Image (cartoon, rainbow, N blue to C red):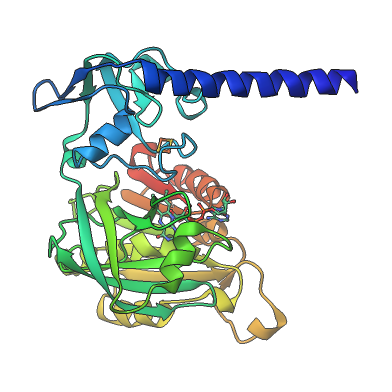
Length: 363
Ligand SMILES: Cc1cc2nc3c(=O)[nH]c(=O)nc-3n(C[C@H](O)[C@H](O)[C@H](O)COP(=O)(O)OP(=O)(O)OC[C@H]3O[C@@H](n4cnc5c(N)ncnc54)[C@H](O)[C@@H]3O)c2cc1C
Ligand code: FES
């Protein structure tokens, strides 16, 4: 009991001290104007010290990915700081590999600007914009997934690579937050952004997106993401998704067949029951027009009511294993829960696909 009380008092004292230090720093220390140099002179800025790097970049319309609103709990805001970032903080280490720490990668939301600071930002991220748009439609795809279409107002067009995502701004009691959603509309549809959003019970972003109505206005930043489609038409494309992980797959498939009508592409989609199936008819229609497009949906938890299902059953990695022969040049895109990604990656590597040709987003 005494031990427990001492631990609680010590923890309370530490939190109180940390809070006092933060308040004292804010009130007493003036860091003055600091220089922020991006990519060795590409975009030099001068700003008030004392803010986090992430907040300062946002204030200058440089939108680094951030899914937790700067709370240090998503690990998305990685940026390379070549000088002036101070030591790596304990709040950053859970999200950084040893290699990243050696390469000066930091979490922008945890680094405060206290002196001149030199950073490297990939040119793709310098092109990220803030968009305002109007909700054009919102329809149910399943009991928990909605397809939502935004018509872009300003800017009126978006240039995106298939597999990229946007960060939608959602209201919350603590101020606006951003959440990542993959773009399901193909790259050639430049005036809209379509999403597939699964409702997470009690979730801020997904609840917001499930309640918005046609005519409402929304804001988002983007596009973000590291997916690169191999331009060599001889390379087969493999898309594997589960749940809302369908969104980037739809984008990749339609963009692919717009450019290469004869390209070989496999879509594997994992569902628990027939209640989770969507877009199947749409893809079967596409497969009739594009004979090199193969569609495989599989149910992992078939119910009695699914008795008319005559497609694949079992976890989706088993279907991938069954359908793909080894030794073919392929590039793969995976989106879904971490366990699915892990199992599918193992199968694809056994089939001879190298790690650099496997792109994934976990959610
Ligand atoms: C690159 C990327 C692309 C994404 N694309 C999509 C997409 O196309 N469609 C889509 O629906 N989502 C997508 N997501 C997930 C999305 O960004 C949000 O994380 C998700 O909608 C939950 O946010 P929220 O604000 O509703 O929940 P939060 O308010 O963040 O969380 C509420 C509670 O739910 C828990 N929680 C959070 N996420 C999940 C989850 N997935 N399952 C179960 N519990 C959860 C949290 O731990 C918390 O306790 C993507 C994520 C990433 C990183
Ligand atoms: S914004 Fe989430 S960890 Fe930095």
